[in-house]
Picture 1 (cartoon, one colour):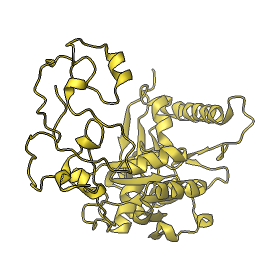
Picture 2 (cartoon, one colour):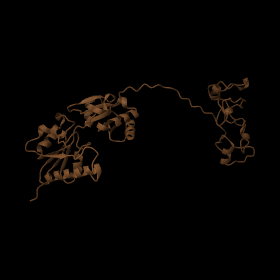
Picture 3 (cartoon, one colour):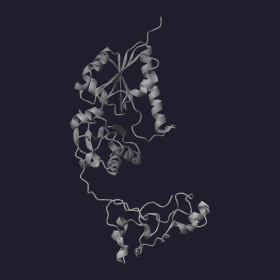
Picture 4 (tube, one colour):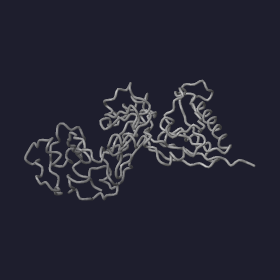
Length: 360
């Protein structure tokens, strides 16, 4: 008679304090025949240390030892190839227990499907065996709790970023979000710090190391010595809802429209500061409202302008005297200003407004 396959559990243990394990996690471990956990080559496992008080002598323990922890290997497939081979071998070991009818609980720090090693087992086994994932408190939530500051609020956007991204991409993502948590620091810390500074967010950044674990540390990120940063640390940009906006020096920008061409087309508000009338007849109107469309008064162009002078009336514009229309290219070549349209009548009144738009 064939054996009924066992059940697979992915058990989230939380950030490190055994008191933050869920009741469901404890029950899953208690029901398991096999307890599996990942570790580095030194054999120590953070996941096992969190769940240690719930392990029994009759538990079969499967230690899944990573063959490498840095991206240096002589494997033919490189770093990724070496890891893929490891995951395949680890999944095969767990599958053997499941095929024998044993219940297997794979322990995972934090949440099993959030940057967790368990997810690689899940992708290889969940479609073949009855599987339950038990969520755990993530390091993101733990860091916010230890800082005692809201992480995101209302319509704020939270971005979670691996610190292993290139600096330019880190900078762009940090500049484009409200709140953020940067994971996987350690050797990436100097790059992350530069990215925060380039994004203008360095002063807002907080640092959390080993939240809810022995050796916990929290402080402003600007005060952190890069040589002391371990892998189990995060950079946090908390909610900005209640932050006072930064005090910035303010100035004034004035945009001046100079008309279609030449000094005679300038409005009084533009001409007054930079030109000095040569006679009383050149005094511009003093009204602060829209200037009236009276015949243009003569004025002497400011000596500081090099723009070509405009004709006194549209009748001298190219094509206006005969009513013919020049080609657009010819008009552009022969005149420093452009007509909005070439279809105004040649006999249009020359009493045009020098303070408004060009004809057409």
